[in-house]
Image (cartoon, rainbow, N blue to C red):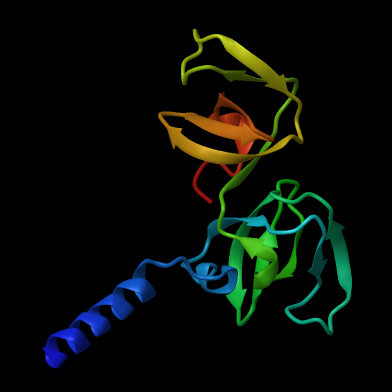
Length: 161
């Protein structure tokens, strides 16, 4: 009976280690390029991969998507939707997929992933949301609890990195 308990305990431990989500730093260790989002309301971008380098930019947009293009220890070289590149500590990023509305004019967010579907609301370029799902050229995004389907080409963060 004791052997069975030990085997069961080991199996449960392995299952917990595999199934439980990892912290942000571990979740950011993937093949580049990949999408990530800013974890906090204020995130500092530096000119190099350590706190010894000067701050180049301070983002104040939690959820803003960035493209991770290089990994160096606990730092990520990222690019934002305007093409700005710099280094951000991996602890300041989350793997939650975000998107920012891009392009000219208002983007129509629809009830369904279809041009003929009812428009729920419109969003200006620069609006940041969280992607729920993307399929067939459309992405469903959530902006502060309001959801809708938008054409994928109106999002930075919606396609392949």
